[in-house]
Length: 73
Image (cartoon, one colour):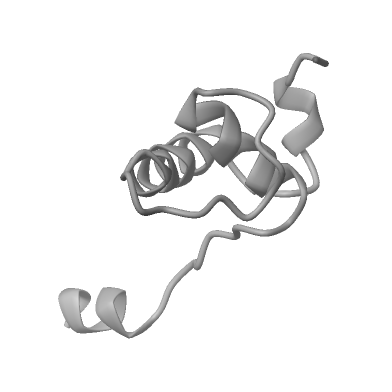
């Protein structure tokens, strides 16, 4: 099993904070008993699966949107 480093995400996501939030949310989804991972599972840990999904481009962060605009107005 290869290690995952922060440098691998440089072209995938704009900030480390956004990566942490995205992977935390996805890991909680993957941890549910009926969840199906989007990549082959290499680890029993849902956080590793979430990071792998982001690395392979299966999960992406949505930036901006109607919710933010309504909140600011």
